[in-house]
Image (cartoon, rainbow, N blue to C red; front, side, top):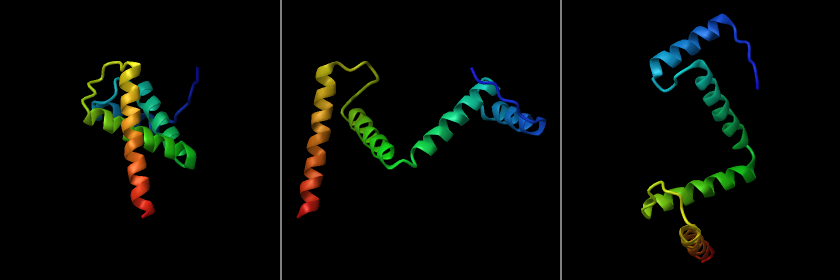
Length: 98
């Protein structure tokens, strides 16, 4: 558990953001989201993390393109998506070498 003390002027800004955005049900949800976004931004400064994140976004897009509907994928499904992604990477790699 983490407790945070925030000055009154910032509380008002947060309350307005919660009320006007319609995205958050409470101050707590707003702050959790802000922390997640800041953490991701900080992690993206790390080259290795950024590469993994970008690759996972490509895999996610490929899965959606191939009909992934949000259900839990079976091992066979995951393997097929990974194989297709690797083939795409290999094709790009061969294209860049010539």
